[in-house]
Length: 162
Image 1 (spheres, rainbow, N blue to C red):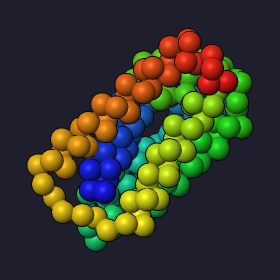
Image 2: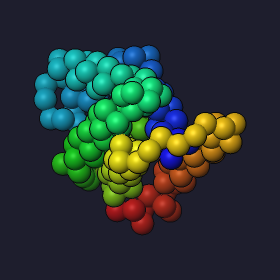
Image 3: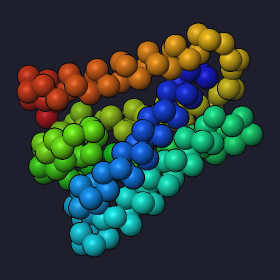
Image 4: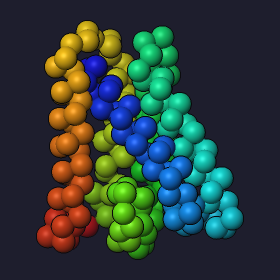
């Protein structure tokens, strides 16, 4: 389970960094996703990014790993619910490092739901022991996660995901 923990921590850290680096683009996206005025977007983005960053750090610390996992599950669940409320709308979900406006489909909704489920599994299980294999497994999970995201963005897969 430790490899999953580090994988989730890396996803959270990259998401928080992405929000900080590209806040000009992602602020209005966050506002549109939640259905508030654009002026609230950057604040929503900052709060989400801060929670993600803190959860990423907490996941790497055995004393607060469960709290970090629960915070991560909360962020991803809220994101999945927000996407579900906008199903069919053309939104740049911010899931990728480049702008990709597309209709919100099942795949976009399920991605954060899967991460939330993994975070809950981490919260409910013992950490496990560290080995060099843990690092490589976490990197492997990351590669598979991003590859699955790229496959889902291909029109053939995106069409069937509706």
